[in-house]
Length: 390
Ligand SMILES: Cc1cc2nc3c(=O)[nH]c(=O)nc-3n(C[C@H](O)[C@H](O)[C@H](O)COP(=O)(O)OP(=O)(O)OC[C@H]3O[C@@H](n4cnc5c(N)ncnc54)[C@H](O)[C@@H]3O)c2cc1C
Image (cartoon, rainbow, N blue to C red; front, side, top):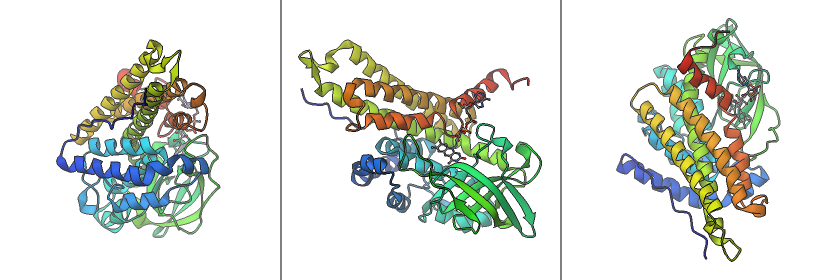
Protein backbone atom coordinates (compact mmCIF):
# COMPACT_ATOMS: atom_id res chain seq x y z
CA UNK A 1 0.00 0.00 0.00
CA UNK A 2 1.46 3.43 -0.93
CA UNK A 3 2.17 6.06 1.72
CA UNK A 4 -0.70 8.46 2.29
CA UNK A 5 0.52 11.88 1.20
CA UNK A 6 -0.24 14.63 3.73
CA UNK A 7 -3.10 16.92 2.75
CA UNK A 8 -2.81 20.67 3.42
CA UNK A 9 -4.74 21.74 6.52
CA UNK A 10 -8.22 23.06 5.62
CA UNK A 11 -8.28 26.56 7.02
CA UNK A 12 -11.12 28.93 7.74
CA UNK A 13 -9.82 32.30 6.64
CA UNK A 14 -11.98 35.41 6.81
CA UNK A 15 -11.27 37.10 3.45
CA UNK A 16 -10.19 36.47 -0.12
CA UNK A 17 -7.06 38.49 0.65
CA UNK A 18 -6.12 36.19 3.52
CA UNK A 19 -6.69 33.10 1.36
CA UNK A 20 -4.35 34.57 -1.29
CA UNK A 21 -1.83 35.32 1.44
CA UNK A 22 -1.86 31.71 2.62
CA UNK A 23 -1.35 30.50 -0.96
CA UNK A 24 1.68 32.80 -1.25
CA UNK A 25 3.08 31.49 2.05
CA UNK A 26 2.61 27.86 0.99
CA UNK A 27 4.37 28.55 -2.29
CA UNK A 28 7.29 30.21 -0.49
CA UNK A 29 7.51 27.29 1.94
CA UNK A 30 7.66 24.77 -0.92
CA UNK A 31 10.29 26.72 -2.82
CA UNK A 32 12.47 28.39 -0.18
CA UNK A 33 11.99 26.87 3.27
CA UNK A 34 11.02 23.17 3.38
CA UNK A 35 13.64 21.76 0.98
CA UNK A 36 16.53 23.16 3.06
CA UNK A 37 15.11 22.80 6.55
CA UNK A 38 16.59 19.47 7.67
CA UNK A 39 20.10 20.01 6.29
CA UNK A 40 20.38 23.58 7.55
CA UNK A 41 19.08 22.70 11.02
CA UNK A 42 21.62 19.90 11.16
CA UNK A 43 24.38 22.32 10.13
CA UNK A 44 23.19 25.06 12.52
CA UNK A 45 22.67 27.51 9.64
CA UNK A 46 20.40 30.53 10.18
CA UNK A 47 18.49 31.32 6.94
CA UNK A 48 18.93 35.08 6.98
CA UNK A 49 18.04 35.28 3.28
CA UNK A 50 14.67 33.64 3.99
CA UNK A 51 13.91 36.44 6.47
CA UNK A 52 14.85 38.99 3.79
CA UNK A 53 12.33 37.34 1.45
CA UNK A 54 9.68 37.25 4.18
CA UNK A 55 10.24 40.93 4.86
CA UNK A 56 10.00 41.78 1.17
CA UNK A 57 6.72 39.82 0.91
CA UNK A 58 5.29 41.72 3.89
CA UNK A 59 5.32 38.64 6.14
CA UNK A 60 7.38 40.19 8.97
CA UNK A 61 4.75 42.80 9.81
CA UNK A 62 1.49 40.95 9.18
CA UNK A 63 -0.49 41.89 12.32
CA UNK A 64 0.59 45.55 12.36
CA UNK A 65 -1.04 48.65 10.88
CA UNK A 66 -0.59 49.37 7.19
CA UNK A 67 0.14 53.02 8.08
CA UNK A 68 3.70 52.03 9.03
CA UNK A 69 4.22 49.23 6.56
CA UNK A 70 2.40 46.42 8.37
CA UNK A 71 0.09 43.89 6.74
CA UNK A 72 -3.10 44.92 8.59
CA UNK A 73 -4.07 41.27 9.04
CA UNK A 74 -6.15 40.00 11.94
CA UNK A 75 -4.32 37.84 14.46
CA UNK A 76 -6.31 34.77 13.41
CA UNK A 77 -4.72 35.05 9.94
CA UNK A 78 -1.22 35.93 11.15
CA UNK A 79 -1.20 32.91 13.52
CA UNK A 80 -2.24 30.48 10.81
CA UNK A 81 0.59 31.76 8.63
CA UNK A 82 2.97 31.25 11.57
CA UNK A 83 1.64 27.71 12.05
CA UNK A 84 2.49 26.81 8.46
CA UNK A 85 5.95 28.39 8.64
CA UNK A 86 6.70 26.53 11.88
CA UNK A 87 5.50 23.24 10.38
CA UNK A 88 8.06 23.70 7.63
CA UNK A 89 10.83 24.91 9.94
CA UNK A 90 10.50 26.09 13.54
CA UNK A 91 13.55 28.35 13.26
CA UNK A 92 11.57 30.38 10.70
CA UNK A 93 8.14 30.27 12.40
CA UNK A 94 9.51 31.09 15.84
CA UNK A 95 11.85 33.67 14.31
CA UNK A 96 8.90 35.51 12.76
CA UNK A 97 7.05 35.33 16.08
CA UNK A 98 10.04 36.74 18.00
CA UNK A 99 10.49 39.51 15.43
CA UNK A 100 6.82 40.41 15.86
CA UNK A 101 7.28 40.38 19.65
CA UNK A 102 10.20 42.77 19.27
CA UNK A 103 8.03 45.20 17.25
CA UNK A 104 5.19 45.17 19.79
CA UNK A 105 6.58 47.79 22.17
CA UNK A 106 7.15 50.46 19.53
CA UNK A 107 3.92 49.72 17.63
CA UNK A 108 1.83 49.78 20.81
CA UNK A 109 3.54 52.36 23.03
CA UNK A 110 5.88 54.47 20.87
CA UNK A 111 5.16 58.10 20.03
CA UNK A 112 3.98 59.02 16.51
CA UNK A 113 7.48 60.37 15.80
CA UNK A 114 9.20 57.19 17.00
CA UNK A 115 6.84 55.02 15.00
CA UNK A 116 7.33 57.05 11.83
CA UNK A 117 11.11 56.97 12.29
CA UNK A 118 11.59 53.25 12.95
CA UNK A 119 8.53 51.08 12.26
CA UNK A 120 8.59 50.97 8.43
CA UNK A 121 12.11 49.50 8.41
CA UNK A 122 11.18 47.06 11.19
CA UNK A 123 7.91 45.86 9.66
CA UNK A 124 8.92 45.58 6.04
CA UNK A 125 12.32 47.12 5.40
CA UNK A 126 14.45 44.02 5.82
CA UNK A 127 15.40 44.48 9.48
CA UNK A 128 15.34 41.59 11.96
CA UNK A 129 14.45 42.10 15.63
CA UNK A 130 15.04 40.50 19.00
CA UNK A 131 13.34 40.79 22.40
CA UNK A 132 15.54 41.07 25.48
CA UNK A 133 13.85 40.34 28.80
CA UNK A 134 15.59 37.26 30.28
CA UNK A 135 18.89 37.44 32.16
CA UNK A 136 21.21 34.79 33.60
CA UNK A 137 19.69 35.18 37.08
CA UNK A 138 16.14 36.21 36.13
CA UNK A 139 14.05 33.92 33.95
CA UNK A 140 10.58 33.12 35.30
CA UNK A 141 11.02 35.90 37.87
CA UNK A 142 11.55 38.42 35.07
CA UNK A 143 10.66 41.43 37.23
CA UNK A 144 13.89 40.91 39.18
CA UNK A 145 16.04 41.80 36.15
CA UNK A 146 19.26 43.70 36.86
CA UNK A 147 20.39 45.24 33.57
CA UNK A 148 20.59 48.93 34.41
CA UNK A 149 19.88 52.06 32.40
CA UNK A 150 21.17 55.26 34.03
CA UNK A 151 20.19 58.70 32.74
CA UNK A 152 23.08 60.86 31.47
CA UNK A 153 21.91 64.08 29.80
CA UNK A 154 19.82 63.19 26.76
CA UNK A 155 21.06 59.60 26.85
CA UNK A 156 20.66 56.48 28.91
CA UNK A 157 23.71 54.34 29.65
CA UNK A 158 22.81 50.63 29.63
CA UNK A 159 24.96 48.08 31.45
CA UNK A 160 24.29 44.40 32.10
CA UNK A 161 23.77 40.98 30.53
CA UNK A 162 20.72 39.59 28.77
CA UNK A 163 20.44 35.82 28.33
CA UNK A 164 18.83 33.40 25.88
CA UNK A 165 18.20 36.04 23.25
CA UNK A 166 16.76 34.59 20.04
CA UNK A 167 18.61 36.33 17.14
CA UNK A 168 21.16 37.56 19.72
CA UNK A 169 24.23 38.84 17.87
CA UNK A 170 22.55 38.93 14.44
CA UNK A 171 19.53 41.19 15.03
CA UNK A 172 19.33 44.70 13.60
CA UNK A 173 17.41 45.99 16.62
CA UNK A 174 16.78 44.88 20.19
CA UNK A 175 13.78 45.72 22.35
CA UNK A 176 15.46 45.83 25.74
CA UNK A 177 13.95 45.91 29.23
CA UNK A 178 16.24 47.59 31.74
CA UNK A 179 16.02 48.83 35.31
CA UNK A 180 15.77 52.61 35.60
CA UNK A 181 14.25 52.82 39.07
CA UNK A 182 13.11 50.86 42.10
CA UNK A 183 13.32 47.09 42.59
CA UNK A 184 10.48 45.03 41.10
CA UNK A 185 8.16 45.52 38.13
CA UNK A 186 7.64 49.29 38.48
CA UNK A 187 11.32 50.17 38.06
CA UNK A 188 11.68 48.83 34.50
CA UNK A 189 11.75 50.79 31.23
CA UNK A 190 11.76 49.67 27.56
CA UNK A 191 14.34 50.82 24.99
CA UNK A 192 14.85 50.25 21.28
CA UNK A 193 18.57 49.60 20.83
CA UNK A 194 20.21 49.37 17.38
CA UNK A 195 22.14 46.18 16.71
CA UNK A 196 25.34 48.06 15.94
CA UNK A 197 25.33 50.22 19.11
CA UNK A 198 28.78 50.79 20.56
CA UNK A 199 29.44 48.65 23.64
CA UNK A 200 26.93 45.96 22.63
CA UNK A 201 28.43 42.50 22.17
CA UNK A 202 27.16 38.94 21.90
CA UNK A 203 28.57 35.72 23.31
CA UNK A 204 28.89 32.59 21.17
CA UNK A 205 25.44 31.08 20.54
CA UNK A 206 24.21 28.45 23.03
CA UNK A 207 24.63 24.83 21.94
CA UNK A 208 21.03 23.68 22.00
CA UNK A 209 19.08 20.41 21.82
CA UNK A 210 17.03 21.65 18.86
CA UNK A 211 16.37 24.73 16.72
CA UNK A 212 20.09 24.69 16.04
CA UNK A 213 19.63 27.03 13.09
CA UNK A 214 18.21 29.73 15.37
CA UNK A 215 20.98 31.57 17.22
CA UNK A 216 20.29 32.02 20.96
CA UNK A 217 22.94 34.08 22.72
CA UNK A 218 23.81 36.19 25.72
CA UNK A 219 24.11 39.90 25.01
CA UNK A 220 26.51 42.11 26.93
CA UNK A 221 25.73 45.80 27.37
CA UNK A 222 28.91 47.57 28.35
CA UNK A 223 27.90 51.20 28.87
CA UNK A 224 25.75 51.31 25.72
CA UNK A 225 24.49 54.87 25.13
CA UNK A 226 20.87 54.98 24.05
CA UNK A 227 19.28 58.36 23.33
CA UNK A 228 16.10 59.17 25.28
CA UNK A 229 14.35 59.38 21.90
CA UNK A 230 14.67 55.56 21.84
CA UNK A 231 12.93 55.09 25.21
CA UNK A 232 9.58 53.40 24.51
CA UNK A 233 6.69 54.36 26.75
CA UNK A 234 7.03 56.05 30.11
CA UNK A 235 9.81 55.46 32.62
CA UNK A 236 8.69 52.54 34.77
CA UNK A 237 6.18 51.28 32.18
CA UNK A 238 8.54 48.70 30.70
CA UNK A 239 7.36 45.65 32.57
CA UNK A 240 3.72 46.26 31.65
CA UNK A 241 4.84 46.66 28.01
CA UNK A 242 6.87 43.43 28.24
CA UNK A 243 3.90 41.49 29.61
CA UNK A 244 1.54 42.89 27.01
CA UNK A 245 3.98 41.80 24.28
CA UNK A 246 4.12 38.34 25.84
CA UNK A 247 0.33 37.93 25.81
CA UNK A 248 0.43 38.27 22.03
CA UNK A 249 3.72 36.40 21.71
CA UNK A 250 2.33 33.39 23.57
CA UNK A 251 -0.30 33.00 20.88
CA UNK A 252 2.56 32.89 18.38
CA UNK A 253 4.21 30.10 20.38
CA UNK A 254 0.90 28.21 20.50
CA UNK A 255 0.53 28.45 16.71
CA UNK A 256 4.15 27.32 16.19
CA UNK A 257 3.54 24.34 18.50
CA UNK A 258 0.53 23.24 16.47
CA UNK A 259 2.60 23.60 13.30
CA UNK A 260 5.32 21.29 14.65
CA UNK A 261 2.69 18.80 15.88
CA UNK A 262 0.92 18.82 12.50
CA UNK A 263 4.19 18.16 10.70
CA UNK A 264 4.85 15.21 13.02
CA UNK A 265 1.34 13.80 12.48
CA UNK A 266 1.71 14.11 8.69
CA UNK A 267 4.94 12.10 8.85
CA UNK A 268 3.38 9.50 11.14
CA UNK A 269 0.34 8.99 8.87
CA UNK A 270 2.48 8.76 5.78
CA UNK A 271 4.79 6.20 7.41
CA UNK A 272 2.04 4.13 9.04
CA UNK A 273 0.20 3.65 5.75
CA UNK A 274 3.36 2.56 3.92
CA UNK A 275 5.05 0.33 6.51
CA UNK A 276 3.93 -3.31 6.68
CA UNK A 277 4.28 -5.76 9.56
CA UNK A 278 2.48 -9.09 10.03
CA UNK A 279 1.57 -8.83 6.32
CA UNK A 280 -0.48 -5.64 6.73
CA UNK A 281 0.14 -1.91 6.88
CA UNK A 282 0.76 -0.97 10.50
CA UNK A 283 -2.06 1.61 10.09
CA UNK A 284 -4.42 -1.42 10.14
CA UNK A 285 -3.70 -2.07 13.81
CA UNK A 286 -6.13 -0.51 16.21
CA UNK A 287 -3.36 0.33 18.71
CA UNK A 288 -1.79 2.58 16.10
CA UNK A 289 -5.03 3.91 14.63
CA UNK A 290 -6.13 5.12 18.06
CA UNK A 291 -2.76 6.75 18.61
CA UNK A 292 -3.07 8.66 15.32
CA UNK A 293 -6.66 9.63 16.16
CA UNK A 294 -5.56 11.01 19.54
CA UNK A 295 -2.72 12.96 17.92
CA UNK A 296 -5.10 14.53 15.37
CA UNK A 297 -7.63 15.38 18.09
CA UNK A 298 -5.05 17.16 20.25
CA UNK A 299 -3.95 19.19 17.23
CA UNK A 300 -7.49 20.27 16.36
CA UNK A 301 -8.22 21.13 20.00
CA UNK A 302 -5.05 23.22 20.20
CA UNK A 303 -5.78 24.99 16.93
CA UNK A 304 -9.29 25.83 18.10
CA UNK A 305 -7.96 27.16 21.40
CA UNK A 306 -5.38 29.50 19.86
CA UNK A 307 -7.85 30.70 17.23
CA UNK A 308 -10.50 31.43 19.86
CA UNK A 309 -7.97 33.52 21.79
CA UNK A 310 -6.87 35.27 18.57
CA UNK A 311 -10.46 36.14 17.74
CA UNK A 312 -10.91 37.70 21.18
CA UNK A 313 -7.78 39.78 20.54
CA UNK A 314 -9.04 40.75 17.08
CA UNK A 315 -12.32 41.89 18.67
CA UNK A 316 -10.42 44.10 21.13
CA UNK A 317 -11.45 41.94 24.09
CA UNK A 318 -9.15 40.76 26.94
CA UNK A 319 -7.32 37.56 25.94
CA UNK A 320 -4.45 37.18 28.43
CA UNK A 321 -5.93 34.13 30.25
CA UNK A 322 -6.84 32.49 26.93
CA UNK A 323 -3.34 33.17 25.53
CA UNK A 324 -1.78 31.43 28.56
CA UNK A 325 -4.17 28.47 28.10
CA UNK A 326 -3.38 28.24 24.39
CA UNK A 327 0.40 28.39 24.95
CA UNK A 328 0.18 25.75 27.70
CA UNK A 329 -2.15 23.36 25.88
CA UNK A 330 -0.60 23.64 22.41
CA UNK A 331 3.00 23.19 23.52
CA UNK A 332 2.12 20.26 25.82
CA UNK A 333 0.14 18.75 22.93
CA UNK A 334 3.11 19.25 20.59
CA UNK A 335 5.38 17.42 23.04
CA UNK A 336 2.96 14.46 23.28
CA UNK A 337 2.22 14.32 19.55
CA UNK A 338 5.86 14.51 18.46
CA UNK A 339 6.85 11.84 21.02
CA UNK A 340 4.07 9.59 19.69
CA UNK A 341 5.19 10.27 16.11
CA UNK A 342 8.64 8.87 16.97
CA UNK A 343 6.85 5.80 18.39
CA UNK A 344 4.79 5.31 15.21
CA UNK A 345 8.00 5.18 13.15
CA UNK A 346 9.55 2.61 15.53
CA UNK A 347 13.35 2.37 15.23
CA UNK A 348 13.36 4.60 12.17
CA UNK A 349 11.75 7.34 14.21
CA UNK A 350 14.81 7.37 16.44
CA UNK A 351 17.19 8.01 13.55
CA UNK A 352 18.19 11.22 11.84
CA UNK A 353 16.90 9.79 8.53
CA UNK A 354 13.35 10.91 9.39
CA UNK A 355 12.33 14.35 10.67
CA UNK A 356 10.23 13.23 13.65
CA UNK A 357 13.14 13.21 16.10
CA UNK A 358 13.81 16.85 15.13
CA UNK A 359 10.15 17.73 15.71
CA UNK A 360 10.35 16.12 19.16
CA UNK A 361 13.44 18.16 20.06
CA UNK A 362 11.80 21.31 18.72
CA UNK A 363 8.55 20.79 20.62
CA UNK A 364 10.44 20.76 23.93
CA UNK A 365 11.57 24.37 23.71
CA UNK A 366 8.00 25.56 23.24
CA UNK A 367 7.15 24.37 26.77
CA UNK A 368 9.94 26.65 28.06
CA UNK A 369 10.01 29.94 26.10
CA UNK A 370 7.88 33.05 26.74
CA UNK A 371 6.98 31.83 30.20
CA UNK A 372 7.42 28.15 31.06
CA UNK A 373 4.27 26.06 31.20
CA UNK A 374 4.45 26.24 35.01
CA UNK A 375 4.25 30.03 34.69
CA UNK A 376 1.26 29.73 32.32
CA UNK A 377 -0.50 27.61 34.95
CA UNK A 378 0.24 30.33 37.53
CA UNK A 379 -1.31 32.96 35.23
CA UNK A 380 -4.43 30.83 34.70
CA UNK A 381 -4.76 29.89 38.39
CA UNK A 382 -4.54 33.55 39.44
CA UNK A 383 -7.64 34.24 37.33
CA UNK A 384 -9.41 31.38 39.09
CA UNK A 385 -8.47 31.80 42.74
CA UNK A 386 -6.67 35.14 42.94
CA UNK A 387 -3.00 35.86 43.68
CA UNK A 388 -0.96 33.63 45.97
CA UNK A 389 -1.24 34.73 49.62
CA UNK A 390 2.57 34.82 50.11
C1 LIG B 1 15.83 28.56 22.82
C2 LIG B 1 15.42 29.65 23.75
C3 LIG B 1 15.11 30.91 23.23
C4 LIG B 1 14.76 31.95 24.10
N1 LIG B 1 14.52 33.20 23.57
C5 LIG B 1 14.35 34.24 24.41
C6 LIG B 1 14.27 35.59 23.90
O1 LIG B 1 14.30 35.81 22.69
N2 LIG B 1 14.14 36.61 24.78
C7 LIG B 1 14.10 36.41 26.13
O2 LIG B 1 13.99 37.39 26.86
N3 LIG B 1 14.18 35.15 26.65
C8 LIG B 1 14.29 34.07 25.82
N4 LIG B 1 14.40 32.80 26.34
C9 LIG B 1 14.38 32.60 27.78
C10 LIG B 1 13.13 31.90 28.30
O3 LIG B 1 12.05 32.80 28.25
C11 LIG B 1 13.45 31.42 29.72
O4 LIG B 1 14.32 30.31 29.57
C12 LIG B 1 12.23 31.03 30.49
O5 LIG B 1 11.45 32.16 30.80
C13 LIG B 1 12.57 30.31 31.81
O6 LIG B 1 13.57 31.00 32.52
P1 LIG B 1 14.85 30.17 33.06
O7 LIG B 1 15.41 29.43 31.90
O8 LIG B 1 15.71 31.14 33.77
O9 LIG B 1 14.26 29.10 34.07
P2 LIG B 1 13.88 29.34 35.61
O10 LIG B 1 13.01 30.52 35.75
O11 LIG B 1 15.10 29.25 36.43
O12 LIG B 1 12.99 28.06 35.87
C14 LIG B 1 13.52 26.75 36.10
C15 LIG B 1 12.34 25.81 36.39
O13 LIG B 1 11.66 26.26 37.56
C16 LIG B 1 10.27 26.42 37.27
N5 LIG B 1 9.74 27.53 38.05
C17 LIG B 1 10.29 28.77 38.24
N6 LIG B 1 9.50 29.52 39.02
C18 LIG B 1 8.42 28.75 39.33
C19 LIG B 1 7.24 28.95 40.09
N7 LIG B 1 6.96 30.09 40.72
N8 LIG B 1 6.34 27.91 40.21
C20 LIG B 1 6.58 26.73 39.58
N9 LIG B 1 7.68 26.49 38.84
C21 LIG B 1 8.58 27.48 38.71
C22 LIG B 1 10.24 26.74 35.77
O14 LIG B 1 8.95 26.46 35.20
C23 LIG B 1 11.31 25.79 35.26
O15 LIG B 1 10.78 24.49 35.11
C24 LIG B 1 14.70 31.72 25.49
C25 LIG B 1 14.99 30.44 26.00
C26 LIG B 1 15.35 29.42 25.15
C27 LIG B 1 15.67 28.06 25.73
